[in-house]
Length: 180
Image (cartoon, rainbow, N blue to C red):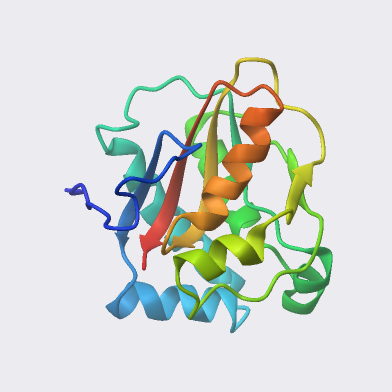
């Protein structure tokens, strides 16, 4: 059973996202799997992490919602070349297949950013300012599902949602494997 996790970072903050739903917490075995997947380049872990991510779809905040597309959080091209893949893209592809929806690469990371780990919320938001731009516009008034591996403060997901909403999307929710 997936429980709702209340977040102190969200209190009193204007969000472009409707919700962020984690499948679990970023700890223990899940943390190790994500680190091996992301930094150890163990791409075989995409499938079990994708299955875990699909559990988030049963959360009452998004269950039964009619999304039009699944949108991965993009990596900057330099980071993607360095890593060899975009973990959010692999997870989004698996989730889109599970949901019977298209995966749409609507965003690109325009400028490289420092890794968010270790930053507080205000530094994360400053680090992301202007980082994301449209690759192609979303369908007008669309309802989209953003996908990433981990969310700590939600700054990355919200920065992506802001760009999509400014371009005409109506609602954006997000799912992540784990909440840090």
